[in-house]
Length: 87
Image (cartoon, rainbow, N blue to C red; front, side, top):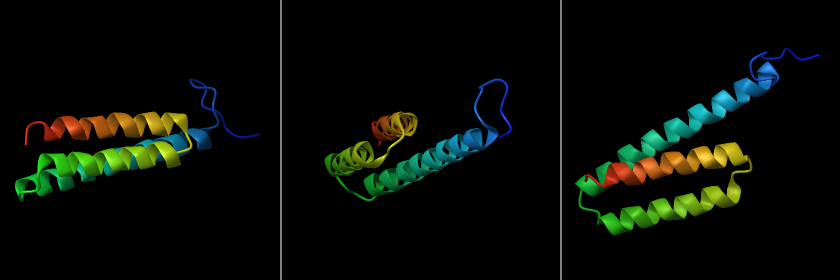
């Protein structure tokens, strides 16, 4: 029988997978923020950058299977949009 996390009632391996996915999504969002900011600083129009991010969001919605991961990616992507408001 798999070891369980008493606080969540899920197998520890499942928690590890969730933590890995959340870490990957966070890293992905941070990289996107850096890339988008770099593009803006080097003259790419805001509209083009936002269009690219919108296409990425649409792709995420179509390809990410986990509702939790999909919601997390959407929240992180919204943070990228907000970060770009100041550039």
